[in-house]
Image: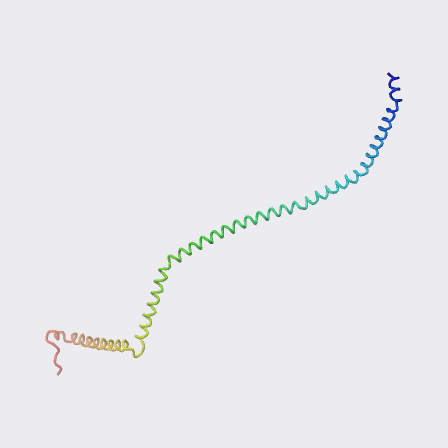
Length: 173
């Protein structure tokens, strides 16, 4: 067996295969060294990039939290604005209903105001100096004053002469 192995190793094909294997091993070793030279800086660069990414994420995280908080606040404000708008709409509908219900009342008030204005004008005319109503009123007041004076005189007469109701006024001497 040793002789067969020596003979096999001494064959030109075996030497050629061993030579090629040695060359391939040397190429693999050179490739490994080249890879080692290239992967070292590449690995450091990747680590630096990862570190920068971590720092960026750490800086962005509070901003994202603030943004999320701001979005929540905007959402709450929008909900409140929607509720307020709904209340304003309800109030407008109620005001519209009141206005529709108040239209007859407003018309009545306008008519009443017009009638009061006309009555005030009539009273002004009646109370104006020299107006017929005022002259007639003054004449009526004069007559009422004269009648009151006559009643007073009758009352005085009856107090002094109660029999005057039966016998009439006594004759003055």
